[in-house]
Length: 400
Image: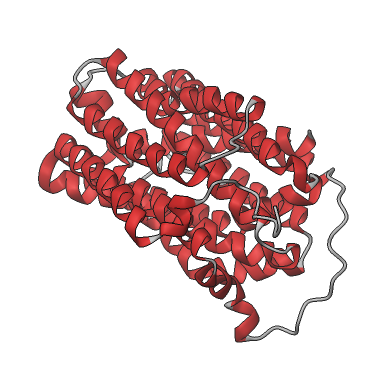
């Protein structure tokens, strides 16, 4: 429960932080391109350092890595308080450049935090409970994703510095909880460091076509279909709601995700998981098309909620497959590959949304991306037939 609570607090802080950064960036520049750059600047460090971070998660204490990453986020939030309030200066010194710089720091932090955190979870759960445990963990994460943006939007009424100050406090609580975790690392010795051990996670995923299909499906689906970076534009210019409305829009996918996580915790997927995965991704794309065309706030909220429920099915299936089919000594490196795919889909997807919105406007960007997501789901049936035919999450047992 300590890890679950720490993840809840850390995700809440991160969600509030990203809402405040996105709204403040759009206030400063009014540019969809700059909103996209926030995502790109988070993705590049994750791409550059992911292999190093994965090996670190297999060689070092995973809990301490996570705690150190959360501390960096607390320092970033405190620095943004200082910049917004103008500490040590006659006036505020917040700027576009500073927001992009902290985006780089947050991306670097994510590169090390995600593999360690993903690899840590199976160390605390028996294999038979992993699927339900990941669904329960997802429920906590989605609770934070609901509450974080909404809370950030409400606190933003008192100014961006109030959000950043609250983020600092929440991150410190999360760090304290992680430092109190106790688990027994795998005693198996690792090979000496080499290029082969550094690339072992990439090689493993490439050989396991079911894993490759599941991870790459999520990459292309969210890369094309994500609309998170453009929500400030939809909130202000299309749906005509303020920071609180933006927070509610950011939290809407998590409401659907939370409900779906609860269902998957109570009734985990037993059969036809591959087909269910592909259908959920296609449904996600359809929701994005309809959201892009919507001009009604409650309808937009509903569509985002359904998209979050569909995405949760994809997340639970993918994460369970990764953890079940990966030996513990390699979980850090394989989780690093998984996390860079997630980062590419989220942060690089935000950049893609910003670029296409500059050309086509926010509506055209989201609609085109949703159509692309549906086409990807259809293509993956042919490209990864073993994934499409996968019946159970657990590997098949010979003779049964």
